Image 1 (cartoon, rainbow, N blue to C red):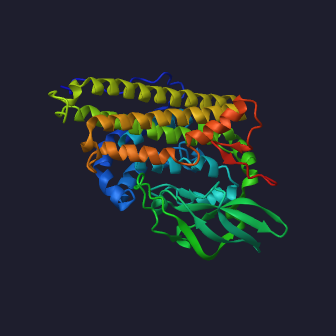
Image 2 (cartoon, rainbow, N blue to C red):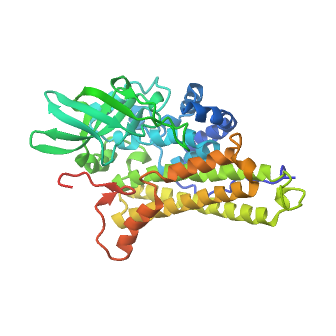
Length: 424
């Protein structure tokens, strides 16, 4: 009875910044959805996406979506990446996370030219994310000491998502140069580090987020080091180096795009769960005595509320994606309070999507938790994504709420990252 019902999401409120390339990649991902979903359970067990699927995603242009045009990329704006992220999440969260990892190209492409040239040396042939990173902004990172021509670096870097398929690995480090010290970021070749078999998790298992470490000190040349105190200067000067909407965005707007991608994946998970939920309501319920789950009033209420949560989340994503792109065109940026409010609102609708998935699973009953049922995987993956340090609703709400109630703001930026400038 549900075959005649159109559950395709309606057109979003504005397509002002949505480009033909953004539409094309989103459509290509939609075509891959059955293949992605068919591989999801095996990928979860393997704790990484299969190589052929990584290659297929790369062939859509996904991993070049925000790479600078000058290096063979598309430099897509926030509205485009929101559309792509939602489509990826609808298929599988781990596939979406590959895109989120690739989205880091927005930041690292603004680093000094010699590093960026080195980063993109293989961009024409590499099938997968150009770079993966771990412990970039974390309080605990690697350690680096200054030597002639570069740095000797050691340490362990956690949550290096996509590490098996990335051409380069970035890691944060506390650096010491004589009496000077600070927080930096260094670029490794994957072969310089040991991959740890420590990614055993309840959700997002296929995101390939193992830790990596340098057992002994590893030499990193000067041009592969960036002092993170210089990050605002690098990011705010990107428009002078590159064309494309992605690089017209200032620092806060650009970093907020990562939240757009992340919550876009969660909204997509809710949409995918809704797809599965509608199909599964055709079965007979355990109780009460209806012919199908769809005839239950509780199912009908759950469907309506879940759809509302998804639509609200997608509307919020489009709202902030459009604001990011509008700031980029105008050459302006979000203020600190505006960025904090955007971050907490995005995290809030992400949590609403998670709750909607949970409510649909509860209506379906115990069969929703069979490993073969995608709803339970969508639920677990959404929970893990929303536990990410930059996505936790309560932490983001406190940061924003302090300002709303006239308390001194924390010295943070980009969804609650600590300011790593000297003396901080």
